Length: 247
Image 1 (tube, rainbow, N blue to C red):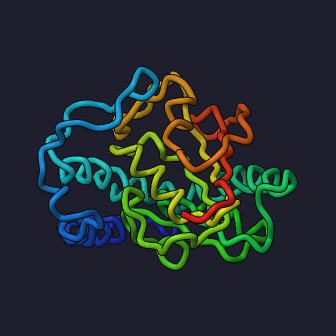
Image 2 (tube, rainbow, N blue to C red; image 1 turned 135 degrees about the vertical axis):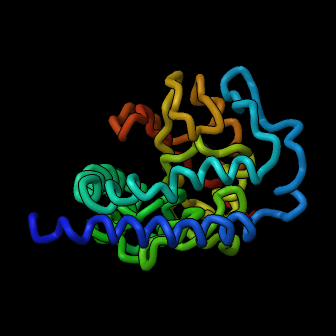
């Protein structure tokens, strides 16, 4: 609207200024073991079906790349405006179907892993799952708290349901899967949206060539459903259920 145009440049200036201060703070507070953030990355879990992208000299290099996207002022404006309702609508359909299939209920305690601004959380709440929270490197209150999916800031067996569409951003996929299983309750459900044999964007840390590249990492869960989806460039939905035994 014409009356809002004079506010755009000051808004962007203040946003950029705040991000300049926020970036060093986030990098200095990596949730992972501090020794890991400085070490040279010598190996990770690559296989014929899951390839870790080369080029990361340290975990700080990896974090900088992820934060370059997450803190990008233009992208954050798009996520908060043009994309907001569209993504909530799509995610709401996904979650409503999962609830109808018995993988999710209104009494579930739910976590969205890598939720950025929190559209997934808003979608869960819109279908009746009130006890929902998101986690991302950059917090976005009140829907998203700060956390690294390689080392979740939650206690064991905290959630009944976890959803993520950022598996391709995991530099350590085995840590990503281990943390989901650690924080899921026995019988809890994990739903992943992934792209199979389709190269992700430049912020991806791994490339997936078969679903076994993911499912083999979930040592304490059973694969209960696979189906095709159209989820913002991701084409496959995996539903895994944690085995009913104590970890």
